[in-house]
Amino acid sequence: MLLDARKFVGTFAVAALLAGGMMSVAHAEESERAERGWWGVGESHGGKYGGENRGKPVQPPQVNATFKQECSACHIAYSPGLLPAESWRKVMSGLDKHFGTDASLTEQENKEITDFLVSNASNRWSAAAAPLRITEGAWFKHKHDGREISPTVWNNPKVKSPANCAACHPQAESGDFNEHNIRIPR
Image 1 (cartoon, rainbow, N blue to C red):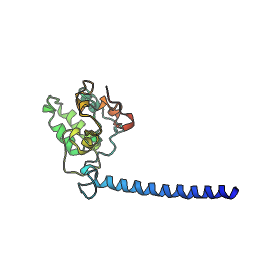
Image 2: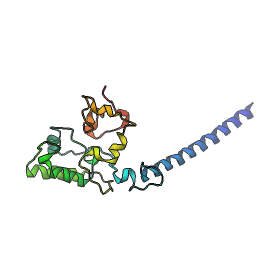
Image 3: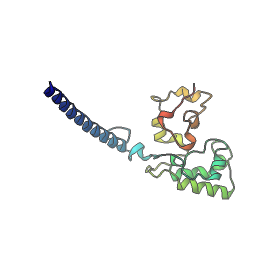
Image 4: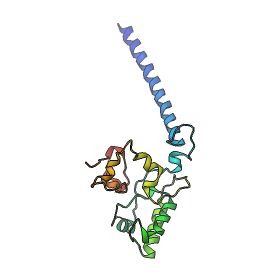
């Protein structure tokens, strides 16, 4: 009886080690696929999300007060890490026609906010694209496509548009887009 128990424990230990090894291989393969891009095996699009890797979009430890005040007057103060530096330069150079509204600032305010956004922009972006909207990026489109998010969500009066991150991501203003915290309004 004691011999059978030892054999069982030994067999179980070997099986656990093998399973752990297979999981490590699977994780490595998944990481490799992620670096190649979510488009599929054999397709090269410049790395993760075609080079549009936003990295971790958390707000920097020191958030610029002018940025916070001016940008959050109309929408959440989007985390600078959601876009590359060139996108922020384009956004800030066109504030007189900022998505249908005049959001002009003084020259000093514009420079201060631009400097903050550029210095805290995504440092992993390698794509040539510099979208004006976060919603135009491959990462956003992949995470919010019709398979994961029903197109009817955007018509919900509590959501209004894809730009209203805080409607479904309660901690969006701090740059937390963790999928476990998503609350889609009904």
